[in-house]
Length: 124
Image (cartoon, rainbow, N blue to C red; front, side, top):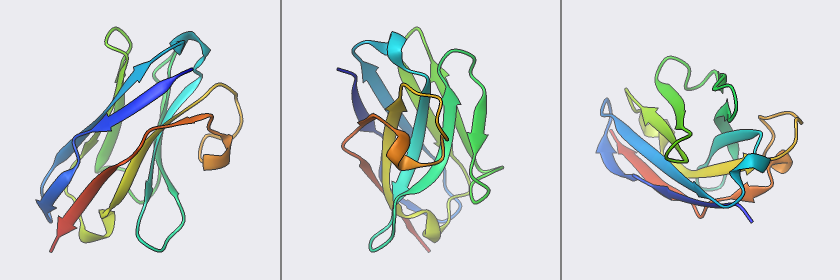
């Protein structure tokens, strides 16, 4: 069973940077994609970014493109999300997720494993 543990959330001001990390354990050989999602209060879970575990190719949501960068360290089994130029609208619980299939990577229902989430709050 793949297990995911996020860390790095917190309270920052608009314009600040923050880096989230996701520690991955278990049978990582079964993973195809790793993704970051976020869910603001009262809203649906939203795709942020994903990275293909084997090749490192990435995809970022338009709302974060140019500000957020997803990366992975296969040797350390970690996936990171570098968040720059943060805005109040980035406030949400951020989740790390992993999937074994090749289905559309921007849909949360296609992911098999989820972390517990980490809160990011951006004040104006």
